[in-house]
Amino acid sequence: MNQLSDSFGRQITYLRLSVTDRCDFRCVYCMAEEMTFVPRKDVLCFEELSLVARAFVELGVEKIRLTGGEPLVRKDIVHAVEKIAAIDGLRELCLSTNASKLRHYAPELKRAGVHRINVSLDSLQPERFKQLTRTGDVATVIDGIDAAIEAGFSGLKINAVVLRGRNDDEILDLVEFARQRAIDISFIEEMPLGAIVEHDRALAFMPSDEIRAVIESRYPLTASEHSTGGPSRYFSMADSPSRVGFISPHSNNFCGACNRVRVTAEGKLLLCLGNEDALDLRAIVRGESDPLPALKAAIIGAMSHKPEKHHFDLDAPVDIVRFMNATGG
Ligand code: SAM
Ligand code: SF4
Image (cartoon, rainbow, N blue to C red; front, side, top):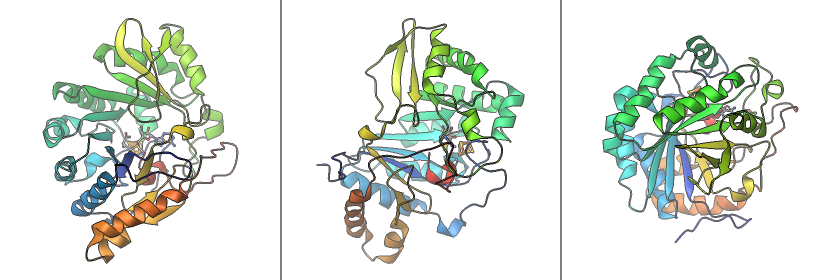
């Protein structure tokens, strides 16, 4: 029985669990060029991560996504996956990655119990990819995606953040890339998380409807009932199994159907992406002799603080100072 519902009657069944705030990329919309990361001693160790995961699953969470930062820069990631995948009652364990290390990890992740993988890919052009990620190599990422397909991951999805004037001319190329591999792709509107100087988020904003119109110039899209329990609205194409999704935090506020909360790498429970309210679960994990019941009670109590919706405003000064890598995207 699910014990997690908020003041607006929403049931919480989905946890995004950040396993690190570190990353080998510095995507221009996600991080500043110079970043200070959380000291390692403050990051939850894998026993602590799995205890937090267990508390949520025992309260009714059915789906967990491991995210970050980049989960695959964490050395003990396979152990963490094994431990979390074995929790009784968990239906789906997913992972978000930039795929830079996926060639190496894909078979182990499959064996350890990951069901679905999302890969970020914003450009297929090597120089542009390097600019957008500041460090990344697109050939390695594409090879990582192909390694995941070879390892037998069927629920694979590409996530692309579209920035006007930077990669909006690649929307159709990215759709072709997904179609060639029979995998899904979602296009994301950039969110104002953390102060950046690299670009003006308001000028770079490209609404989902505009992206959709570009795709429909080649492939008519039909609204699909498909849902992965996340914020993507999906569409199908007549001649391909690939679905196209849109994550539209600005143009189509999805908060009414929000079913998720996040835990940061240092164990802060965030009830909403667009809100700084947090509960320190690490203090409970490290401070209590029998932390599981205390964790569960604290998590139930926190649900009443979940706000009704986010209020992102690209033209206003930055409201949320934490970057997406700290949030657990
Ligand atoms: N490193 C992994 C990756 O890139 O997939 C997992 C963490 S990353 C923070 C998760 C997702 O958040 C990625 O798809 C990324 O594109 C997205 N993201 C990061 N910053 C964002 C922002 N400011 N607005 C919208 N999406 C963002
Ligand atoms: Fe790293 Fe993912 Fe953020 Fe890019 S989006 S900097 S890959 S955490």
